[in-house]
Length: 379
Image (cartoon, rainbow, N blue to C red; front, side, top):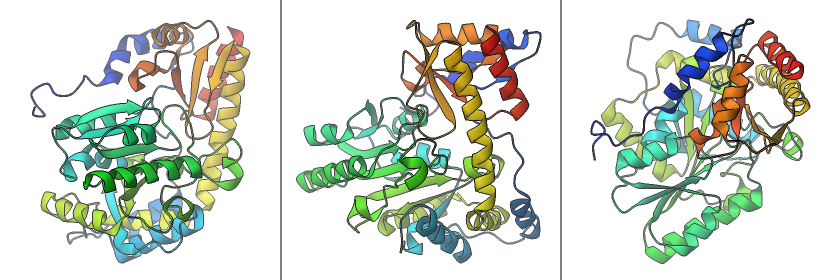
């Protein structure tokens, strides 16, 4: 079924329109916590790098500049516990969402192929499988599904998870990688494990806050073999670069090489100035620490206010969201309606395959977060 023949679901956020209208009618106005779009300034060091590279008269490299690839290698070693990554296994992409949506197609998946993704998941994993003609399946235990059938060709992991902030430890990651490799050996068909890790710098609970969120490329997971493995990362969250569309995929050099060749034919190239800005952003940890502290404060204030108002916050160990449900057990749309009555707009869990929670974003200004907390406590 083609892209223009009704293969895709309606864009879910459009259904929030009446609740946004309700929230705007609040005397104090709307506090929009429904979308995880950064609101804080892009760091000056990154903007300066973008400006310095603005005389970009030639076509940029689809593969990324050598400087950018080297910066990604340094970042993985310094921040993610992945030393010695091959620069040939690094590829810049135009924001991580397009890579998530197109990966099944770029890998040549189609009818009869299954794409696994988390049961509670951002909808683009599902959409990407449908675009390729493959079958998306949401699961809580991908290793068990891999062991039980021979039709899986791609496994999406998301750690820290959107929407629920769950984190996969080294043992859990290793189990999925082992199951995928066992399935590939059993069937003679490759099984790719792709891990969307774009919230990895935003860990709140232990042990992740101290030890860091493990990557699927971590040697403790891979045993030193990156075959069939890809990690996807975006600077939108850690560096407020959502408008730059600055992201990359890294891992298996053969897989990355195949993606590179396809993207050359398609003209999918990260603009040269954005590549320069990304290189600088990856080498500067100070602005990431500052932004993490802003989100930490906002998270603490919102979490306390929701709990004081009788809500339960589940998981939410890392990332930009609180995964919230009322104690009474009502459905997510009723919770969206109740909060809209306070002028607070959130996203229902139904957008992500969940029937109990709402997702609350931390991406609002300090003043807006303080206002939302006051309304919750006042209610």
